[in-house]
Image (cartoon, rainbow, N blue to C red):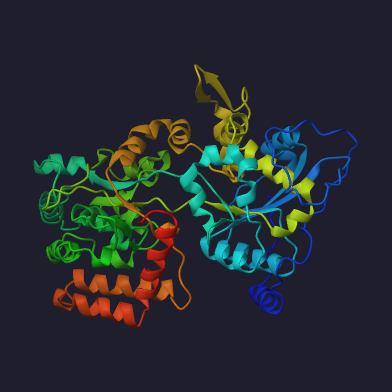
Length: 525
């Protein structure tokens, strides 16, 4: 794996604090000139701006330095995707990945501060805001006609995810699809003579039975109904009351052309009251709010819980199925259809259409090297086109996959060598088709999760305003909601909770910023 040892945090902070220079300097990677063999004609390409200096043609492949987070990247001589891309584009790709997100951020900060810019690099929304405001990122808006394959592949809405103050500063990967649902022990239902729950009230009844009626038949009271990743255990319950939650945060969504925050939704108190019933009944994992990582998954696998809110990979991949069967060969986990709430609403959760699996930016300094900039455009266009997209998804045709009637049929070699191909999917992939190829046995679970109704959330489009600390606010929200659902704070104090959030946590500034940004993007009139 080609990984650069990250500099220490103290060094990163020293350099960032001392020299955040606004784009004065060239790109960090020089142009390689190893061979005199002319590069092959590239596929769709971008052209430099009219007022850009003429490109200085090199005799050999153009070296592109790219950095991102990830793992599993082989050495260049074993990297078949790099080799194929280089052959198609006339490049020498130098991809560096960092397993630790913190290491990556430190390294990127140092490079941006010292004008040692990568030619293409991953950013999150916070970095996108920071670097664009400092004038370090290339405004891609004037180049959109040169990136038409990218735009066609990712979709018009994806451009908004890389937009800041009306300008496109990053390419957002194409959208993913929802993975999460409730899973339930059908063998426990059958043993207790109960039917699959279809409403929130039936969920409560089943969860209580799983806790009190010895569904595993071992004569011990050692099971409970529901588990999940902290408040995630209740996302489908919130959804049944019309309340959106996703990724640990209250969702922002539009109702009657008005922006609604889940915390202010009229159904929130009713949803909290029902969840309080669940916890009072003893049917919820007693350690729910302490769950971290995949602790909830392990409780389900070990037979401690009968209902879990989780993504399909962590219940249906072969290694987890083997673990489940090792504990109890008769265990049968199935997905639950979205539950109906008291008002007839059904939502598995919220789904944030503003989030993206990745954002990739180009340094503004690369305008001074139009040949290299053109190669970056060619790379992005190529992995967005048919041949390039198939390459970075599945590998080499005839080796890692074959096409039968237009359908991708993986070979055994794809499973052995394809674990890192995703690192080159700079503009994403057609998610459903990709997953159906890579996880053919899990296709029913994938399709089930994707078809469940969800509230369309917009959080991913919103940048935090100055003076708003999202981490502190998020921690306070989770702590107080946990108090409400565990009876440590009465619901009569809910409005007081909101006032504290608006005051001490500056939540109103966040909502004002959200309103403006979503109007600018056209999601609000």
